[in-house]
Image (cartoon, rainbow, N blue to C red):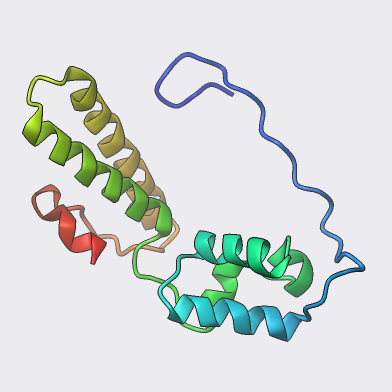
Length: 150
């Protein structure tokens, strides 16, 4: 499949192993859910929770152990953030690009990067509004970007 903003083809992605609970797994379903809730209450995002569980606890797949993804566990416990994580990451990137452009006004590459990032945000907002994860009237205020990072 081609890349989003270029004509390059790109490499194919790696595949995760079959979702089987390994025989050496120490943690049970309830333990994993408690860990996910603990780190969510500490302010970690779902991808950060997954990395912590993988690196510190040796839990290679939350879905294999619990049958649910981290996001659905957080949704069931009402701990999901109001904006999806990928939009927040793109907003953070947009803030960084804007700060760079304030210092370097003639940087054409950064200007193009800002355009591409805003189009990715727009595309994601359209998707999340269609799937009802964002309200239909939600708009990104480009003048007040830093509010979303709090």
